[in-house]
Image (tube, rainbow, N blue to C red; front, side):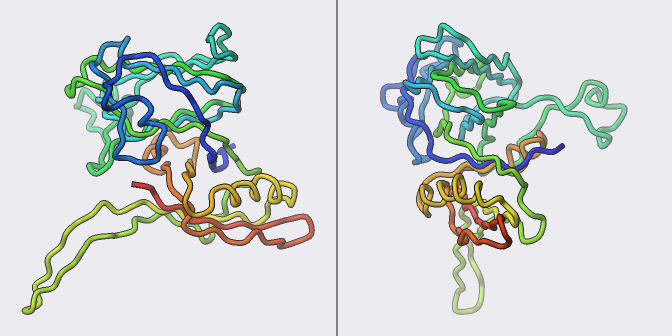
Length: 284
């Protein structure tokens, strides 16, 4: 069965160490919501482009999101989770996996080598770097993670990203409804019209926006996790949305960190059931 939407909030406090990172662009920059603050390695050596995320205590982990990474098409990543901060008891190893794996489709001409070997996945959004989304099969209690990049051939000569996000995750027992949902871009282009009617434009990046809702959550779920999300997030704090965890083709384009620009009231719609509605706007 397809998985339901995942919403992550209340990002965990973590201490980031290891690797080799510029003094002016340290790893701590990746723990802030400000996309202008980036973490940058000093080079692309394997020993330099790794870091340990230590939560201090065991936390329930389901999803990882790394935003703004300058990873090249041949980049790989590996994540290992540990029960203890000393990283002596390993609980999970993703093994090395490609961030832009080869994909195959019938649209590839049969005479092309890519028809037999698959074509390199392309990122078609020139205004945003592809995010890194990694999901565990189920939540896992861990105290520390080791995150390793293998991108020694990166033409920039370094690895850079602006956000490392791990937090509490809610996967509702029922998926969002088909009616009323929508994914859009909020156009922010400035338009000026001259006296003779000629228009000029100053384009800005249009934030993503996703509108969705739940019609029949159990009251127990609505008054616990739903209540907690609404109370904590407000309209100013970061929420990570992963609309379709099973769709590897679109998970990078549809998943993003944003803030709740609309949060409907928790409504009791039938005996024992509640409804909730949201709109999340991308934070750029």
